[in-house]
Image (tube, rainbow, N blue to C red; front, top):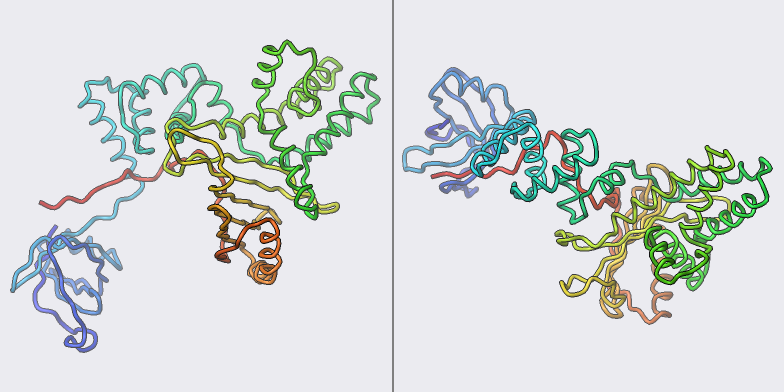
Length: 438
């Protein structure tokens, strides 16, 4: 659709005071002021133009809009020719994705079955190549997973894009609704305390008490001193970050007769005892907690290949302040070098988020380079911004006592982005498109 634009009319302001120029293939946005018959009045950068339309369809298209995007296709001393860039609706975007998926399968001589088209669409949403190897890998994992459709295919493709292993078991874990560690921990401790009050057998009572003591150590004290807080975080990471499978493998290799007291293996043993004693509700609560922990551990698997955002490890924990408890999350960046994926304390980035209310989160982002630290803080409530500014001298003094220099601080108001290793693309999102003018 092209529009030969003739002489400008009713320019806003003095045209000699405003520099206005167009170039071939430039994209511009115009305000649609009026459409009458075969003419339309458009405003671009404060200048109004009369566009001569070539069909009634063009008039109807512009009449339904307040603004429109164009591409300059031709320039001359007498006229400028524009091509209208049509807005693509979500339905059209989804249809184009389906068309593109079929075209790619056909060009690679791959069968256009319902399963292949579903998988191809999922891969395209994640900007992954549609290859026989990837199609086969995802199809095998989903076949072992059970009944599946577009949602499950999208999840498998998103896991692949994140560099995570795609198997029936990993899909089952990833499909679970994420639960904050503090919420899951509080729920489990409440359930176990109730089971303790139901006069369980001595052996089970002993195991419940031991588990409650271990779980209580996972809470980090808000007002604790730095060394104490570091020890508590280390204990939480040691218990929640180490998989049950890893513990059992070590026990087998070392021919050990007992399992670590403060570990997920202890909780797995407790789950078995609860089931044997008919405490099904408590056993289910322990199982839910273990599965939530396993999902977090899956998100921390070393990605292959490493995605664009790099490799991160995250852990959720409970932050306790007197009788109040808060959900908190800590994310740490690994080294970006291909030959190493360890966390280098001298060159890393830490992001801490604390949920003060269900809809209010505070975030602190620290970037460490040697002994230099750059900090960024964000909260939704402006009051927290003022509080953070008042506490800056104390923070700088505390870091100085540890040998660090606070080089720069940014304090903003906004909603922190949630931690998400798997980036799901909305179902209505259109594929990436490129406008090519020849």
